[in-house]
Length: 450
Image 1 (cartoon, rainbow, N blue to C red):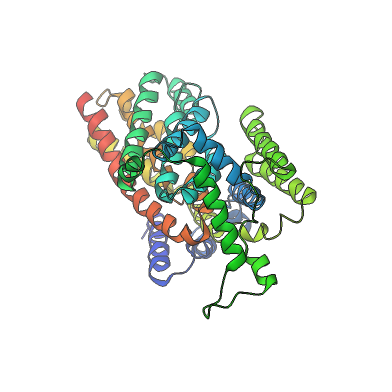
Image 2 (image 1 turned 45 degrees about the horizontal axis):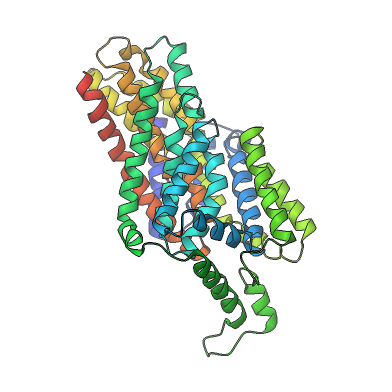
């Protein structure tokens, strides 16, 4: 058996063992990276560790830490109230507001994970306060970020159009943007309806003031009266330690902590989107500054960082990066390129882009697979514009996978008791999209043009 097949088989085993035995998939993947790297590829430990996604680690830690502080001091409650008032109390519009915010931000040049990192904590806060399914909210946010990313000045659009120009291939930036936007919107509509959108519409207009006050009162009541199984209250120390969010007198009021926290969040947005500052380090810097300024409300924030998610994503990405560095992905592309029928090869290219992007870098796979497709694109057996658009859709809409940066951010910002559910549902939907999106994109865009 070739080393390519061995390494891919190990990846399948990691998924199966993690699913059956309940072991953290990231821990298994790190062990697999160590064993496969040293035994199959004769790599060093440093070579294996070079694939650890340090940038993703800092993003997950920094953003979840910052928004844990924002939850503690009531800033998230204030934002939730203000945003719901902005949509006139129509809770059914809240997920679409998050979708559009992400789409606009990425369409003007923001990196997709940066937009999700900023919007996801607030959006998931909406989901908790107004009983919106967290998977719906997470999917709407991720697909919104995807929808705008292929604009002519968007990150994915710029990369794709640049690769096309460099290879002297025919391109159509407008079609690329419209097709990817429509694909992401279609998935958002399906998700919205599948996870209770019609019920949200039936709820109609809700009083944002009453809902926000009720949510805050419920949180304060829970923190103050949390009881044991026998009905006796915990000690004052336990109540204080377990209170997820300190009671706030008025969620409408901007006190000093909330004002400074809002300025910090604004600084994160401006720094990441306006000055291309690293989202993770910027968020971590702001979080540390808030902790120093308001140590009382920062208690317990570090423990709320989603360490399990960090381990899971870090391990999986490390293993997939090892495969990329050892040429396994390139080998797959070359095998596909050797297929006789160009139309079938086009479908396989889209499938590879979808599968790999669900676990690794969408940016990287777009830049890698288009050049691999050049030989048969130049034969004119397949319409280049159509295949590139299909590949863009296949490689981007799967970013809702919990193993991608965007999906990981959604899981990390879900409530602790919801994270397992959100992870499982995103994995189910993500893996379904991995298979369905390439087939639909190929059938709609490529087949009619051949």
